[in-house]
Length: 248
Length: 316
Image 1 (spheres, rainbow over the protein chains, first blue to last red):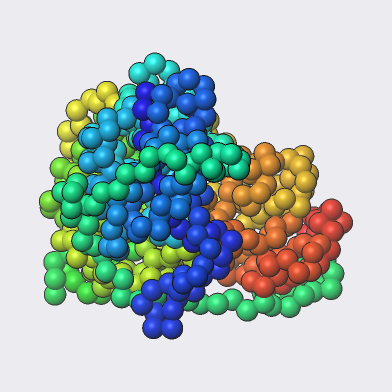
Image 2 (cartoon, chains in turn brown, cyan):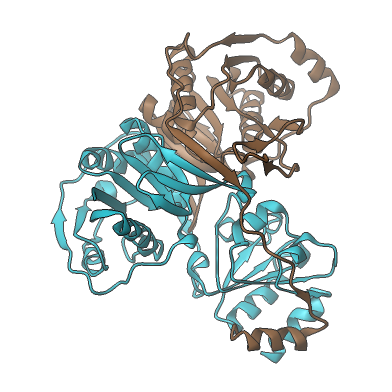
């Protein structure tokens, strides 16, 4: 079974970002970039399935600027076999990304598509569901456990009320939650090896996908800030404050 | 004035309506300031007919569209999406809570309707203009949708609930969707709790890594019970296995905005703050006086939670 994994290049989770002074975009110039953490979990899961002999090939794909090659190489160093970059400078939105991935699914015919449940920049949590719809596949979102059973995937999902386990017909789309696995660190030999692995590039136009944004952002602004309040000296003082405010 | 036709998709478990549903109706009602609103609520499930009666009482609702069918029992996205897609042409807006159920369903329908959905709407400025958080709430984006149909998931902590009485909606039964072979439910392990629901509670007590073990979380539960509070947790506490995933508050967990949020042994990573910083009053209890949680706390108490919590419980 071939697995297609989609990854996104994002600002590293440890970097605090702010809107630029014109409020037209987030100021991310020079920020440390990384594979979106949820996407990294997706790569790890695919590599583990290959190590278990369930997957035969792991193809990792990213859609975005040329610089996303860095993250594709990082995914190759984690154990993916080959990479595809769909190169565009467009302001990409989930529907456009899902359309590009749909075309790649048609070309590659994977048995399973793995994505992160959301990216930590846009926080949309849409692309996997949209891709599943366009392909006519089942979807297992927010997965914390994934077991392949013949032509089915057993997916345990983290939902608001607790856990839900679904049986999905393959091919299917699965999006990862935090507790699916703990991604490995790449080893130096694997980083070296990743440089030799194939990385193909194409464009949305070659896939016949229109990536024009449907949603325009008028401005980015800081949320209302909270001021640090007072440090109370002991429990008595804390309870007195909360009683004054009629909170308890 | 524009005609605004809104479909709200109800969040429920066949037994009760989730309070988030009334918040979404409340968000929809805001559009009455700018246009003539027609508002329907879609209820899809199995043996959920009784819930249609209560939804029909909700202020502002014109019709409750009821699909009561075994295919809809578990509300799998593969089953419900065709219903939404079929109904969509009659509406200008389709809204659902940004719950895991809403996030699972709405984008699937959006792709088939060729609409770029908008996630976690926190404010509705105009029929096509919305505010939503990005980068874990580090910024708020004001966005305009150029699609004729708007599909929105609603951050329910940001809106007032519609009144649950005073409405007199008609209940219209619709045919069930065709059976689908893509997905089936195997099992659900749902948390059963006597405590208030996390996203709707007036008071939330949340614990973090500082609790050190699942057993020690009993202190958090005891304090919560004294305050009739819901219990939340940081990602660190969930990852460490102290508590179940459904208690996680943060960027990728639940978003809460209670009157009072008490953070115990939580350092205050930006991803956690994203889920609770709109609470009205925040209390932080932590032994590290430099913990970032104190920068957003109205009242901070530096101390060992294993001393502080028993004392609070004792004095309440």
